[in-house]
Length: 222
Image (cartoon, rainbow, N blue to C red; front, side, top):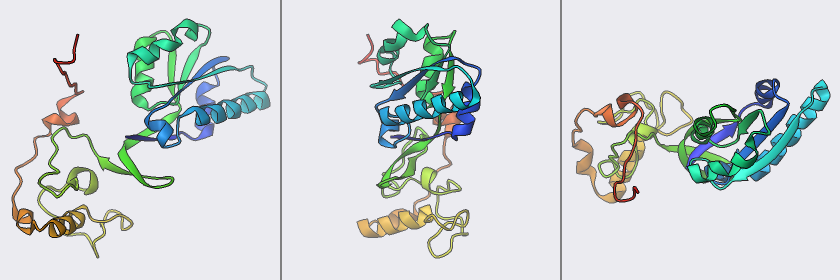
């Protein structure tokens, strides 16, 4: 899932201060799972912004809505009947959803209430960790299911950099060395010889280096 966290409230207050009528939109998908932009967070943010506006003596009318998904045009369209009543959309979706609002309603401000961080998963209640960097060319079958792009701080493809200590990364000793994790995994799988395989230089054209990416499934298009 996409992991995000709410921007500091002070930053959001400054962002919305020019507006008197604000539509706050949450998303029921990833940002709900990571407790950043679901219905509950939308309610809390609306209350906080209303109190801040009252304290500053600023008029502020807020409408709250939480869509099933904000990265899908059919759900974005659900606000069309009333969006003209508001000056700006404060999106509690990830940046994809915020950009969908900007694309769909070009005369409305689309303001991000969240900082979109990474693609990851839950480690424990309230803890999420990055697991995928979206490089577009998955090599997990070569590395025992541990991604060296997302989990090695230096994105090394052929073993550790040599700076790790006690199995921990030299960039941040609080995180495990990605290649130590790969080694441990290959040992557990009985695939130690795979560790010595030399990977070719990575073609980053499938990653962001190739520009904005798009996937077209012609079997699904209409």
